[in-house]
Structure formats: C-alpha cells, structure tokens
Length: 556
Image (cartoon, rainbow, N blue to C red):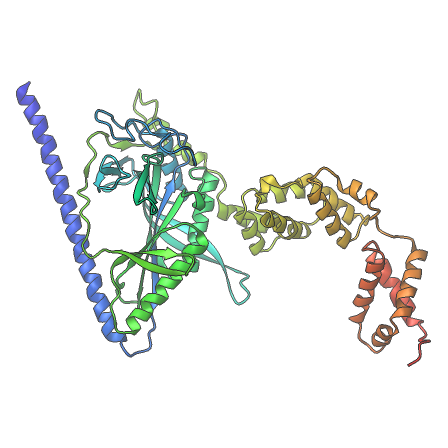
C-alpha cells in the first residue's frame, strides 16, 4: 500500500514537473516573440522616420462570451443579471476548503455548438488548467481555463459588411478563429472612491465563459465591428450566449498594431473590455492612427494595455506588458479530461451524460449568413435590407409574418418594417416583441392601401394612430372614425382641382411652358385640401385634362 501510494504520488509529481517545464518554455517563447516584435518596431521606426508612411492596421480579437446557462460552470449557483450582491455564491464559488468542481454539461454543449457554427475542429479530448493570478475578486487565487488543449480549434468566421461608393455592395471577409476555450469568470470589484474602499460581488465568480481567440486578420475598426456583430448574431441564433454587451455578456479585447504590408507585424497594444460594437470600431481606428503618429514622430510603440474612453474618443495607458506575467499554469488536478463523442455508437456504456457532436450538429439552427441569403433570394429584397432585418432581434419573423398575411410585394412591405416601424421602436427604445402594432394589424393596413381604400399618406397617418392607441384600434376603425377614406367622387374632385388651378395660375403657365414637375406641386395642394384622401391617379387625370383646356383670366 505504501509503495503504491509513493508510486502514484511520484507519477503525479513527474507530470506536474513536465507541465511546469512546458509552461515555462511557452513563457520563454512568448518573451522571444515580444523581443522580436520590439526589434521590428525599431526597424520600422528607422525606416519611416521622415518618410511618408504607408502603414496599415492589424487587428486581432479576444472575446469573452458568457454562456447562456441556468447555473455556473462548476457549481449549482444560479446565473442572473442584477441580482443582489453576493446572493448567488456557492461554497465552491467562495473557494471554501473541501469543495470540488462539477462540470456543467450545458456549458460544454454550448461550446461545441459554437465551435461547429464557426467551422472549428472539435477536440474529442480537451484539458482543464489552473491559471494563477491574485485579484480580490478571484477567491481561489486561480482561474480554471483550457490553456493546453481547448475544446475547439482552427475555425473560420465569415462576416459581411457594406462597401462600394454608395455602401450598397456586400463584401464578404473571413477571420480565422484560433481556438475556443471554456473558463470561469471572476467576480466584480466595485470601487468606492468617496470612501476609499473596494467592495467585492462574487455573483459573477464561476460563471461559464467561452473565450474566442481571433487571429489578426482584420485591418480596421469597421472590419472588427462587423466580425463581432456577426458573432453576436450567431451566438444569439444558437442560444449559447445572449451577447448583450451592455450587461457584460460579451466583452471584447482588441490587439492592435501597424506594419507595412508584407513585413513582420509591429508591436501591439491591447485595448481592454470594450462594451459596444460602435465603441470597438472607434477604439481600434483611434489606436491605429495613434500608433502611426507615434512612428511618424520617430518614437516607438510601447507594448502595453490601454483602455478606451468613450467620452474623449481616445485610448489611455493602463499598464505596460514588457514584463510578461507568469501565470504559473498547471493541470487542474480536480477535473479529469473532458471527453466528447462523435456519435451515439462511440459513447461508452454507462456514460449517460455524454456530449455527442453529431446530435448537436443536427440541431443547429439557420445561421445569420444563411438567413440573409434566403431573404434576398426568396423575397427579392436588397442586401442592405437583409442586414437591417437581421440586426434587430425578431424583425425577420415580424417581416415574414406580415408577408404571410398580405398579398403585397415584399419590396413594398420592407419599407414599412425597416422605416416606419423600426423608427418608432428605436425612438421609444423598444424591441420588436414590445411593438404595439402586430404583424397582422400592419398587414390589414397594407391591404386597405392596396385595395385603394386609402392613400399612401393616409396609410402613414393611420399607422401613427395605431401606434398611439397601443394597437387597441384596428386600421378600419381609425379610418371610419376619422373619415379618412379615399375621396372617389369625381365631381367633388373636379371642383377641388378647378379651385386649385384658379388660385395658382402661375403654376399652370409653368406647366404649359414645359415644366411638368410643377404638376406634382399642384397634386400636393389638392392632397392638402382633401387631407390626403384624394385618389392620386384620378387627380392626375383631372389636372392634365383641365390644364389642356385652361384659359388664364388673371391680369398682370
């Protein structure tokens, strides 16, 4: 027994020594890369001093996505935003002695689904590690992560952005996804400057995260913002992360450097914890221009961590990264290797909680890029409209529900959804599900317009009234109560047209002289007389007839 115990202990110790050597070698390699980048920086500085710079930005991203799960990664504590401080903390989250982690299957499935959606290779065997650092909001003094062998590697995110002179061309670009790893979130430090103290909230400690590392394949803030927005949509479609950046569910760190195309990368800076797509774009573009200005002055870009100040639109130094921090990585001794299986046949007997890749792949939903292509091909809408529909949660379903309930062409419906409806939603800061106008109510309004019961201007007036009544009144009811139906009595319209012509002889003379655009002004005056209720087709015919036979009786 004693010999066996010594043998096991010796084996564990040997493995830990090997792991320590591995990580120290990795740390040494990182220092060499850092020195190499610094050398490139000095060479670039020497070449560009006094010479017009032809530099371009290089951007890589590290994204922390909070997994949408009822409980944390290794404990049964709940996950709820804005809960009372320290109300969701288990013994494990507080790192009390004797507690052990139990892996949350939902978090593993979320990571695998995300990896599949991003075209990653899923490692059938992945490992957990301890990353040591000492923050007040990290009670254990280490974070459980996946440094050596993450759950997913070598993926690709395809994103689109609008380009061309008129910003109406869809440009597709790719960014490589180096890896996706599971790890714990830390708690939250709340700094009270007035009392000179820091308060700790451990509700977030232990919440499951996916860290997605994207290679430096982007060149500017617009590309990085488009990539992150596409990732947001993918995560929301999968249900693996709600990706609400304002609530910290998606946090982005940007690694930014500049170089001459075809030459080694320059020294990079890391801009931390950017909490909106718009600020991400601005922070990256500012940092690229800042580094170019530094090199133009003959100075060196420092390897440092910076923060973005949204008020001033600038980045500010937080700490330098020249002295590489040693996180003393080691294998997590309390967790076995994480195994996932290709299909049901490969699952060992008795493994009732196994994660099966084939089953998860079969359950993947339609991804945003597929939805955009389908909307354009099926409904014939413009590509930019497909982007607008996808960017608002629930708007695609709203649009397609209106189409099913009306016979109008999709191109006519899309304007009502993306212009009229979306404008009011944004003005009131509401989401689509909170709209007081249902798809069926909008479809009814469009049908009334299509049948010629109301004009287009009255339709917009009725739409506004539907919104004000919070959907309690139908379009037909509003039209009847306010007498907004189309004026179709030809005799009445002829009298109104004659009145307008008699009071505006100068416009009639202009039309007879060949300026046909003035006819639209006359039609506008008639619509004003009828409060938008005149049939524009009938009005145009009457005006053209009367102008031909019109006799100017006015005197100069």
